[in-house]
Amino acid sequence: FGRDWLLAAGIFRAVQREPIDYLAFLFNTDSHGRGDYYLNATPPLSAGATSGEVRLSKAFGTPTLRNIVYVRVTGRDSSIQSATGDTKEIGPATVGNVPQIVMPVFNPGPVSEVVGVRQFTPGVAYSGVWSSHAQLTLALQKVAYRRDVDTPGAPAVSTDSSPWLRSGAAAVSISPKLLAYGDYTQGFEEIDAAPDNAVNRNEPVAAQSSSQIDAGLRIQIRPKLQFLGGVFEIKKPYFNVDPVGVFREVGDLRNRGVELSLTGDLTDRLHIVSGAALIQPRVQYQPGATSGPLRAVAVGPV
Image (cartoon, helix red, strand yellow):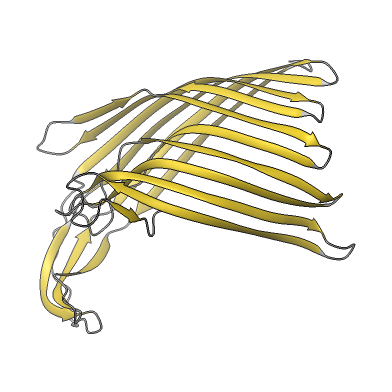
């Protein structure tokens, strides 16, 4: 709508189909790798999601100070089918010697659980750029989230959540060659489904709140060569299999770290892209969620 107004919209459809799946397990394994061998058959599963966004923005300001105000609405409607399937006990086996057997007759049955998620999120944001001196972005969103779990033979279970999500970012030019930046973001994300070794395998987890804060410096060493160094901290709930085999929230995950990069032209003929991230992941377990210590290094989670 002229120079100052912009309307953008999009709609997206994602579909996932998985055929019948066979999983092998070795339970009660001893120090020699011997254990009880099981096979599991999971029925065909499917998932689908339709999501969309409408965003209206208005630009205004002066040649040295440019401002943009955004009004945005996003929505999503998804359905995920899952099942634990049918498990057969095969007998003793070792990690390096799995018995060759005739395929058992499985009865994985129908899909045992359907999880539907509806989410509606309106939000507003402001972005300002003051020439080459500073930048500022502020945003506020309100989530309306509902998750319905329909399991045959059991009452439907619903989960509602409506958190406020705040975010802000700023960058300031301290000198022509030195820039400082920082930002804080609150998120609302789905953790994924329970893994194959859980009692409640394939069960999707309700969305969880998370947060991230980071800050750093950018140094312009040469006109086309810059160094960036920053620190960050990410916090989110920690999900894993508890002592009785159920995949659930068992604590809090905190990732602290440093990220460094050097990019640009070292010479007229040599361009470098280099970086490193040093991360310290820590889990604080809830009482009773583990038989080990309440604090531990988190190995493996993204």
